[in-house]
Image (cartoon, rainbow, N blue to C red):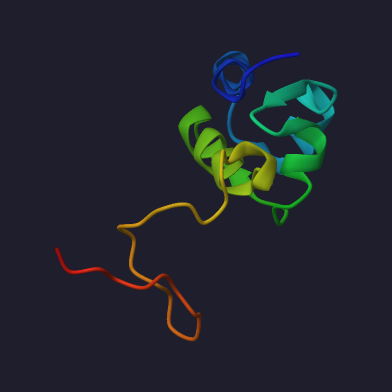
Length: 95
């Protein structure tokens, strides 16, 4: 089991360009240890469209964008971030 950063370091040894399917075939069985559970790189990469990555950094950033809520400590936790349009947010306090 690997941390997300350690797992995506595997991409550095891969030859590019590479597709989402190529990375799933090569690294899909890699299990990620996340703050609130685990998942495989195959499940993370499976959330992406079939893309072609030119570099390991492109593949890494796409992977970071596709991890589940299990990678987030507390979903929606912040007293500073603005509320998205159409959502009921927290009440702002004036000190």
